[in-house]
Length: 222
Image 1 (cartoon, rainbow, N blue to C red):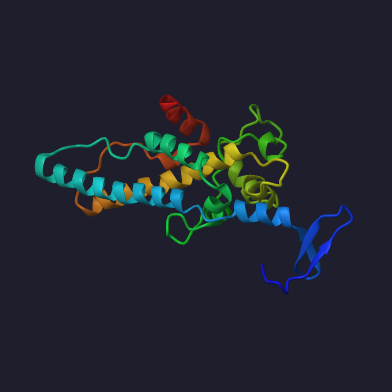
Image 2 (cartoon, rainbow, N blue to C red):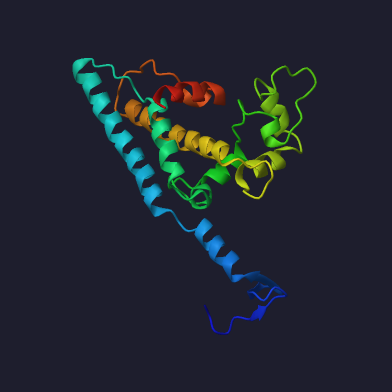
C-alpha cells in the first residue's frame, strides 16, 4: 500500500483506508473485495481449453463424415454442462462473471445484460410476482419477453449478478453462466463442423431449450 494513502481509526477502533472522494473502507473489507474479484486464470484457461478442444473435434468429425460417411453424435451439451458446473463451483464467481473468459469481448455479465436467458426460472427467485393467470410460478413461453421489455429488466439482472441483492442465488447464477459458456462452445462446434464441410446431424439445439429442460438433460450425469 502507498505510504501516502490516508488512514484512520474508526469508532470501533479498526483501521480504515481512504478509497477516494472522502470514503473510507475497512482493511478487512478491501482484502475481501480483492479476493472476490481476483482473476481466476485457472478456470478461464480450462474453459478455453474446452473451446479449443471442441473445435478440433468438429474438424475431425467433419473429416470422417466426408471420407467415411460417419455421422457423429455432435456436440453433447448436457455432458459439457455437468463438467462446466463443477469447474465453476471451484472458481471465483466475481472474476468469471466480469472477465472475458471466452475472449469474445462479452463477459457473462455483459452478455446477460444484452440478452438475459430467464425462461424456466421462478418468479419468486427473482423477487417478482407472477402475472395474473400464471399457473406455475415459472417464467415460460412469451412471459420473459414481457418482463425484459419492462422496467423490471434491471432488477432481474441485478438479482442474478449482484451478490448483495437479497434475491441473488449463486447456484442460479452459476447455472446460467454454465449455459452461456456451454452455448458458446456448442456454437463453435457447429460452425467449425459446417465450415469443414460436415453434413448436418440431428443434435438438438441446446440454446433453444428453457432452463428446466436443460436441467433435466444435465441431471442424467449427476
